[in-house]
Image 1: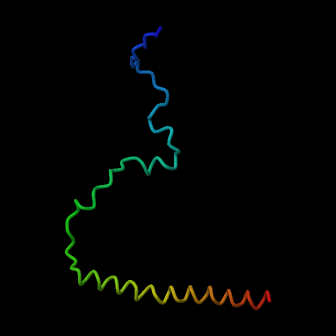
Image 2: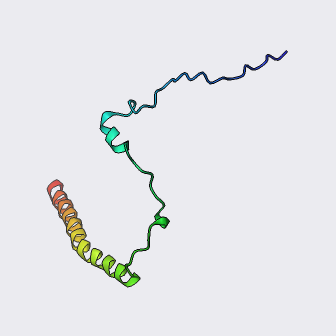
Image 3: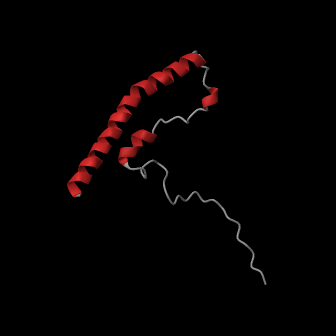
Length: 87
């Protein structure tokens, strides 16, 4: 014999209050008044042409390449010094 299922009734009882008190104090400022991220496609078109965008990308790489080479050479120098020191 099957027992009849009791019909569930919402009595308004709250198990966990969603007042924001459950969020740590440091994070509350980050979440308050936050808008949802808008779709990137909905933004207006920029007035930068393809040629200008490529020029900006080349300029970025021209500035960052020497820095990258300096970092790689420093790692190589440290590796060489460790090799000489430990051998």
